Length: 303
Image 1 (spheres, rainbow, N blue to C red):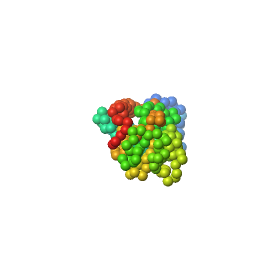
Image 2 (cartoon, one colour; image 1 turned 120 degrees about the vertical axis):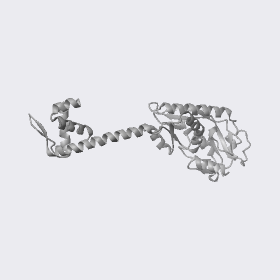
Image 3 (cartoon, one colour; image 1 turned 90 degrees about the vertical axis):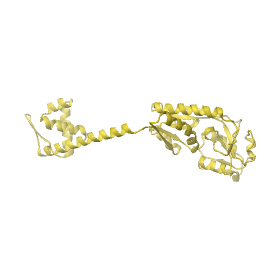
Image 4 (cartoon, rainbow, N blue to C red; image 1 turned 90 degrees about the horizontal axis):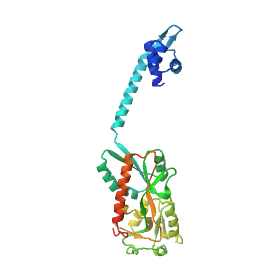
């Protein structure tokens, strides 16, 4: 049963004439007959006595008139209430992140966004990679932070920053005072923490394979996530080779450049058909803040 059937029924009940009902509803008379027939089939009862000269309501039709009016009234009220709620909802911007570092990266841009677009509400999603890509495809999120070589199919990648690779360790590590390191020097760096894909982009995972090559099992720490890896690094159990997202650096850790490796391209992906003005505003703020932070930060951090 649908509102078209109910509106057609009430119009015929009002005029007791299929032709006049069709004129009022601006549809053809056969379309009116079809709506009435399907409604009668669904109800299992005849609503009208019809002859070549007259139309009148059956007892079932007279009873159903009240119900049809109440249903249409409730439908109209429901639509109005939903419309009011939708109009009163704040405009939302869905942003997907793969790890806590990307969340840290967003903080200053979100703070500025709150000042420039106070009516916009960001919705942050931190869930597994494949789920984020599905949310992007379904437009549940409009922006997804990622590295270029992890860009989902059919999505547009927009670079925000080039991330050099760095050796990350705590202050007590023997290499903590170094200004740069090579891959060969990492053989004596101690225990290395690493994560499986998709925590690392494919390009970094290939480098990690070189870093881990030849190490004994007791010199490896396999971590389920970056959160775990950074916790072990901060507590002195391990070190790691990571892309350097400077605004997201953790306090009390050392970030030592490894210049023999090319920087990785980090940015956001989106579907061009669904990106709206608030998303463009946020992207602009994020680009500006990252550019300011990157140019003002030293290559060697003693944070």
